[in-house]
Length: 567
Image (cartoon, rainbow, N blue to C red; front, side, top):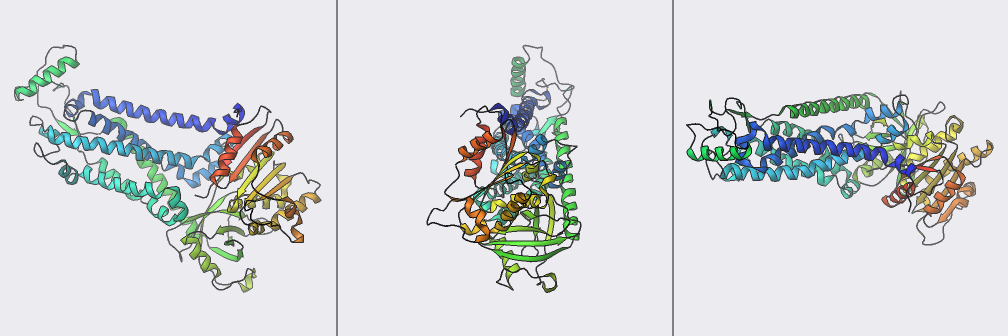
């Protein structure tokens, strides 16, 4: 399929430029550090003892330090939300780049894991070299206490060795628990292990301060490879020969004093460590701000509604809470877990007529199961009780709101929203905002596609869809909203039989959407326009839409892809 340059530039161009720049910085750091330890005069004797193991271990350490300083930045939720909401500060292209923050976080995390393997492997070789190449002429360089000492003893008897083992264990837990299957099946394991990053950074600072490797501090008084009467004849001959090979037959020099060694700390690494400390301090400051904000703002649960297919709707009230459609919040219930915070997209935002906000949560996993039991334990009905007869609900804390790609739906003249199952929640708040006043937005046409396995799932927002359709008909804009519902479970004939949902019944189709035909239809009706494509659903749907957005015949219509996920 031909790739349209216009669509590719909008969807992939900025992201690839940022990634190429990031890769270039990593390559530069690795190369510069490698050459520093390979040919630097201050590391001459250390390099002769350890060889390439020294260069590779320190070069990989520079890459690790750089990425450890960046990996937290994409998790500054409050800062990213502020930048997204500041129309004067960032344009749409930059705001769409902010949506890739999780991708950049994952890229930094994978790089940390890969270069940790390289770093550990190189240091294992170094430990063997320290044991085999024990230097009697330069005792300060030695980590081993004597020639032939067991390298395993060196690992468990030094600060860098012990902290390195602990770092590997912590990183292994964080990496394995971050896999997709664990995040989906047991989010609690992912959440708790990922918060080990605090322990990781504390151990990392101790690891850096270990000082096992040393550099020569008096290079001018003791040039690399110079001869000294106090050194062994083998060392003098080896140094002179190597120096002659390296310095093109330069005349042999005599050492003015003994070589002095100090724990190494290159100047350019100091800036990385400083930046790493600053980023951690900023992250802690943001976390403290969010903790105070969520703990001090009282949240009142107004109502709880049990929907089909194990979905619970939660309506809440909080003073001063002003989210935008498409944003999400983090919910914390101390009765379930004092430390766990789970993200849920807002399905209802406060308005002038109704100050409540709501979320729809799918009962899937231990936390949502326990939370839903607390919400519904005193009633099996799905009725909404008035405030005067309100039941006693568990205490909840709300952190947010935070930005998401769905906010951009209103910034296009034409948008396509595709939802799979419970992935409809980001678009429910968009539909509600259009129902309240569709005229205030730039959006002039919305294609809404919802794919579900169970027919009962469409009832979650059936009233909202029918109400919006009636509102648009009264306003003489029946072409504003194009709704397509797909029931992927083809076993048995099913339909929405209620009279009040006749509109949805007419839009229901059995099977899966024909995405290519849908895009062709949108192109014909919206030529020479930018179409925002928004997806929240399974990977199969997301991949198909992403491919079609970049594979576009030259009709002048550009499709800009925006993806939202729950995991």
